[in-house]
Image 1 (cartoon, rainbow, N blue to C red):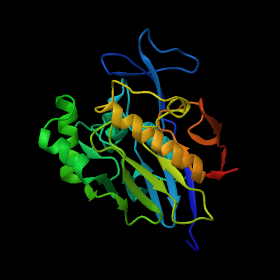
Image 2 (tube, rainbow, N blue to C red):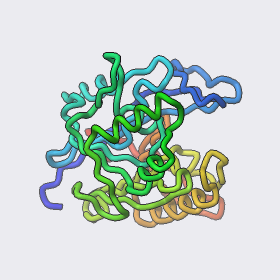
Image 3 (cartoon, rainbow, N blue to C red):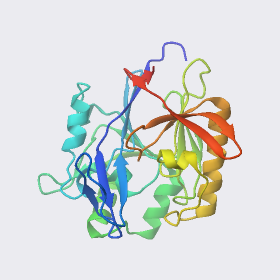
Length: 273
């Protein structure tokens, strides 16, 4: 990995209340979720390495209530970047809260948010939605097939991809073909990161063992989660948690019969401090 320069940032898109209607309502700082609703953060990740500008799960865009891709533009602008500068978009799984930012209708018609980017997605994950022929509701289905027809897509298998240091691994469970992205495992001298979408999306997923009814296969998701936690603990990997509000970067420091100790990893200029 000689000469590699890699820095990773969480682009906080907001905190939301999500009820049974599955509508994401933006919360103000300190505001609680509605009764019976989940409180979720959205953290797209920006990875700057070599000459690449990479987004890992690009957020929800205008699919939140009163949402837009303007938040993403503002987040990128803090690094002197525009959406047109993004060279690659990497996707953990095809749920709207992870990919809704790929296109928008600000001018009344669909436009790609990252028109110059190559989009990396698991081959079977994208085939699953294409075979079904629908994606959430009418607007979401129109969005999905617009993006697939207009954007540059690389449909990948498990294993390394042509982004330096990146490798995908099937975890399933949350969707049938959810993947975990491992970043930097090929370089022992550099930190290794893992982002597993909603299989490990928050600190709570690291603290306890559970099966969730929102997963397509709760047993598989639970088994994949525990296997990843064990491997990450043994190898010192850093977790990137898409839905974690307070600490999107975390590491497991101790293991006991009751579980793991989870430590926040503080990032300075995109690297662990």
